[in-house]
Image 1: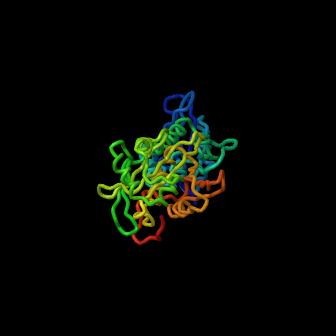
Image 2: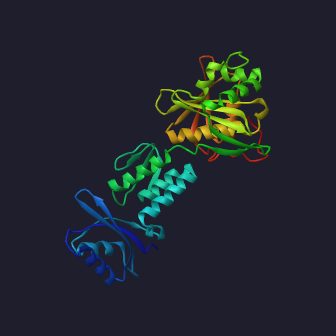
Image 3: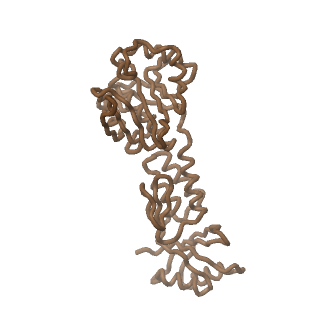
Length: 340
């Protein structure tokens, strides 16, 4: 049975109003465990966490507040987590979301003390936070709380770490990092080591090497980013994330050197691109493949990403949702199922 309650109360702006409420609660053998003052338009809300005495009901707590001229605007069950001060609670929620993006909704629920936070569209009495909806029946959300939630989302949308590590399926250490102009020669060499089939699958043309004038664009795509996979001093794969002009949609492409295919490199690279896409707010990734080419769909499955396909303009349009059980860090497990 719940004996600890979280209450939000409005009190008259007079000296000792809160003290009189706490004295009355103490007389009922109730212990105030925590107190927060929440600024609201025109004044403040006092939020208290109360451990009720034996036989004291929520209605008794509400009456104690009312008897001192106050108004209880919300009451709900509480636990020991409610005893955290607000900065500590927010920092713990941020750590949860940063370490596991799939738990962002739970982190927001904790920050807002919400009944639930789910993906969807907001209805009456609910709050839209990006592509998520927050619901709370016991008290209305305050502007301070919503500002705190938006700050958390801004933090999560910040750029992901520039350099990430991974292991190939056979245990070789690789580094994933942004491409720069200094990588032009390494990217040119990557293309020369790729077979005609790999080049055709990537560029849909029969060229043997990439024109030199393309290198700058590959490393500095307009409205996009490029990630390179490096082994020692050699670049072995390249991935791009480019905004399509359609809101929330980005185009992706992968090029993995033949010798590094089916070793988990493509899945890790796609997982890194999906992570960057989530941070940038994209909800769909699109790639264009030859109709007979299914490697990207398998790679998406290996990366834990849902993919759908359809024929369009003679090509296979692959649509990938960057959310899901995508790899949190692009680290492959030695001995995992072989994939491109």
